Length: 307
Ligand SMILES: [Mn+2]
Image (cartoon, rainbow, N blue to C red):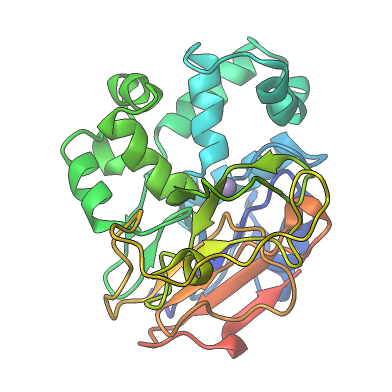
């Protein structure tokens, strides 16, 4: 059978109902215990877990699709965190536990099911190069991919050694896995912290790695709409002078990249001619979104689908 394209599905975060609704809308059918499309393949960008009400069902749907070949998947930071947590490399602070609670509660921490899922998360690729299309959870960074390519297991997956190195704050592996799964960030100092969408003060901000004009703090950082400081004052206007060194090499390849992670809102549209985010906040009340790629060289707003 000739595949006519990939349907790249955003961060599900335990919302199995949105996933089923999106699959149905895109013409997938539940046959022989798995969702399938006659001539397309789904690709999950990762972050199947945490937050939502149906963690196990979400993983089970994705996993059965991967097993029968009707889907591919790449790891998200939440799958990586789940592995690091189980291996004891993640500080079991109240904040980290809170973020992982929906998953731990549903699987039963330390249960056989838990260990079995962690084993599967270990097999997920950290990036997917599909020829004319690239898929990664948060940022396509060739330098990070080159460094990790020498350390990953089969199919660009995690290994126990890599997990250990990548959870050591400040190590090269930590930095590169952060780049791919969380995206590059920059310190805002001496400017104040801003409140993120969850009301947490943050001194670091995400960087628009997909935007060739992201050269200064003003043009490069991702802040919420109408940002405020921790004391509720309007956030100051950041300087527009180009930074001497950027947190990441900006993406300039003319090969489409589809990614998730960024909690976008509003009407889905590509972030540049060659990049598109498919995370429209399904984990926080938004729709689950997919980009339906059929070989086009440049990405277009018409090719998004939504739950
Ligand atoms: Mn994420």
